[in-house]
Length: 203
Image 1: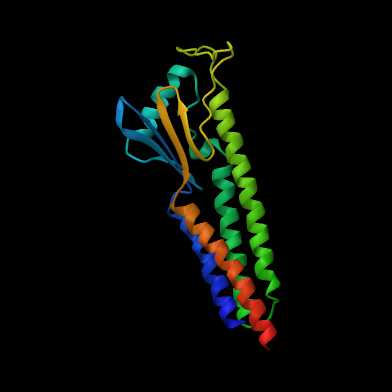
Image 2: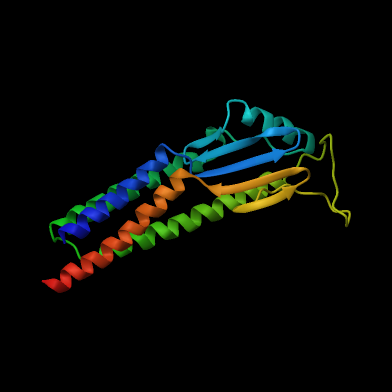
């Protein structure tokens, strides 16, 4: 399964892009901000798209009682996620090498994909929980206390995926370069499974 093993190795290595490129991007645009404010979310922390974006977003959030954007030391995820990705890359490369030399079944390629999919779903679930907490756990002493039409306190959870109008802000939340690299890498491991299956039957 030489060809399948090589594809598996390449697919696994593409996940290393998560250490260089952002996984997710959230942009906030409004009339008073002709250049939208943005956050790039990496597996190792959150950075502003432009130099002062985080500072400006925190300044806006202060008025409505939202927490400041967390630093690396504030979230355990920024320590755990890089380790998990590193381990999955190493396992994927090892499986690819063993497949190349015919030491493991092609089914291992699919097993890696399933495990990575489960971890990805768990990561998205955790990310959504953070967004909920970020947008709903407001300071009761905030300068501005806005209410919904039914009288309940307004919340400010950004969308997990897609577009949402929030006050006078247009909020967009979409996968970024790192997520696309991970997706392509995972799809390559599925390709490796089918190529490996074909090579196995050809023997």
